[in-house]
Length: 420
Image (cartoon, rainbow, N blue to C red; front, side, top):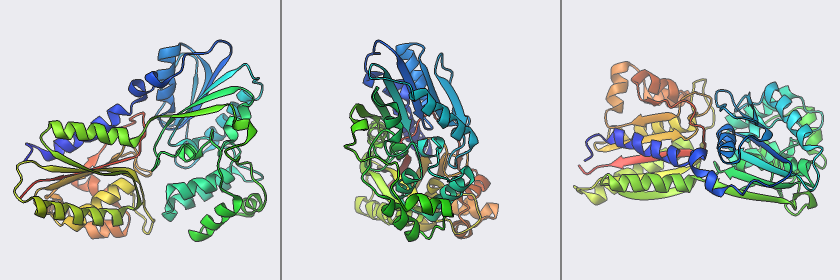
């Protein structure tokens, strides 16, 4: 048994975040800076850090990048605008308008570097048709609370936007564009990262309507009108996307492999369950609890602990009025299912440092979690019922708080299993 399993779990999470830091991972993937006019644009929770990394290699650049409040970085030429996430605001809308204006006068000799990471869906805000910002916010909030998978949410977002689904790249045409993408989506599909502002998409407005119906999301007339006709989403083979190259330079799989290497150096065996897990957080947690207990029984009194690693993006169907997020809810549901099982500890955190709407990365649990809850007077089952995982872990002191990590390769989960 490790001297302190929970310290090891925190170290694994920190390693997963470290290898996804754009200052370490972007430089080797950047092309040489072209001659002539170069414009850098971008959006996402990691985009300001990406801009900082670009200027460390290229020097001061012209450009505009939109990131989350509190995630700005010092740059020499690229303007950094902070806006709201996960629900868009006017700052993001105004900055998106200026970004489109910046791209509007480019010609075929110009070059655009686009820096896209998770969070761009909310930060790039340009509602289609007559949809108001307030209506866009309401639809976004409903999607986030519905439990819909991220891929389905992004289909709706694309068809309600003037920049997603390849439209941002089209705005720069005929300039050449290279898009550097930091993946936070299961499967690392470039069309899903930030709702694919530089990538075409084969979905239709009818697909978006079906998703809204499937998840019982009521929409205003303006949204129905946009989805009743042809939207601006571009097919992948559209001419205006012909000068775009999309490159993923960091992804969840790399972070899991780095954490796996560290765990092995610490004397643990490792099983990677996958980097693209999806589903309801509490359901995945119940499955993982059963798997952990099964592995513990199979291994018996093994001298080497086992670490189960997984990534992806889980969802929460909001049923209560609490403060929760998919990582904290997963951790709470896992603890609830394990009921204090000896030798099993776990961590679940979002690599961007923000789980749901809380400024908390996630939580850590162990065999003492039920007794800590009882001593504090909080109930695991009640907190689950109210989707109040963050308040539960705050009460027992088991939150993981990192502040802005300046990167985003999605959820990180690790379960430590020792023989008993």
